[in-house]
Image 1 (cartoon, rainbow, N blue to C red):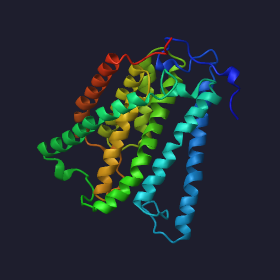
Image 2 (cartoon, rainbow, N blue to C red):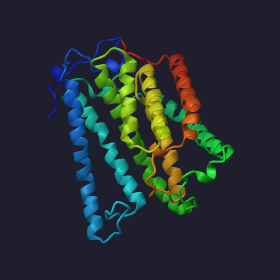
Image 3 (tube, rainbow, N blue to C red):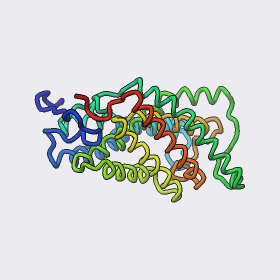
Image 4 (cartoon, rainbow, N blue to C red):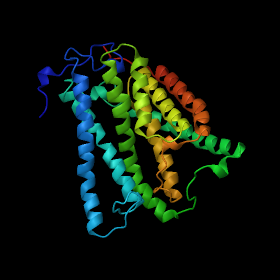
Length: 310
C-alpha cells in the first residue's frame, strides 16, 4: 500500500545528500522503524527466495555443499546469493517512501533519481582503478615473497565455455548485488544517521564500520580495507550528491573478483574480502583515494549537483 502522495515530503533546496531524510515529515522514530523494517524484511525475502532452491536440490538428490546443504553447484549458489542480496534495493526504497514519507529516489541522489550518465562515467573510471588494485596486489605479493603463501585457491583455467556460462550469470546479477549494498550502506544507513546529525563524517563512519562487519571477520587487514572502502565511497556519495560513484566502483570490483574466481574454478571458496592480506590495504590506500580525488575533481568540472537543486 503506497503512502498517500500528499504526505510525501522532499528535502528543501540546498540539502546535502546525507540530510535528505530530514524533511518536514521527519520524526525521530522514522529512521529507526525504517531500519527495523529493512532488517526484518530482507532476511525474510532471502528465505523465500532460497527455500525453493534448497528444496529442489534436496528432492533431485544434489550433493551437499560445504555447509551440508544440498546444492546445484558453486555457480548456482553464487547466483542465489547475488540475487538474494539484490532484493535490498527495493526494500530500502520502499522504506524511504512508506516509513520516512519521502521520495524513494532521494536515496539515489539529490536530484531524486539515479544519474545514469554519471554512473556510466564512474563505471569507466572504475575499470583502470580496479586494474591497478589487482595489479598492485599481485605485484606487492610477488615483491614481498608472499605470493606462494597467499590463499589463492585452486588456480586452474576452467575453459572458455565454462567461463562464458559463468559470466552470463554474473554480468546481470553482480550489478544488482553491488548496487543493493550501496543502497543499504551508503544510502539508507548514511541518511538514517544524517537525519539526526549535521556532520557528514559522523554519518559516514558508522556505515563504513557496519559495511566491513557485514562481511564477517577474517583478518584485521581485511576489515581495515573494507572500512576504507566504506569511508571513501561514503565521502564520495556526500561530495557528489549520489550513489553513482560508489556503485560504479563496487560493481567493477565485484565483477573482476568473481570473474577471476570463475575463471580459476574458485567460486566455491568461502574466502571473502574480509580475508584480504595487508598488501591489498597498502595498495588501496593509494588507489581508492586516487579514484576518489579524480571522481571528485571530475564531478566539480561537470557541475554535478552535490545538494538538492533549487
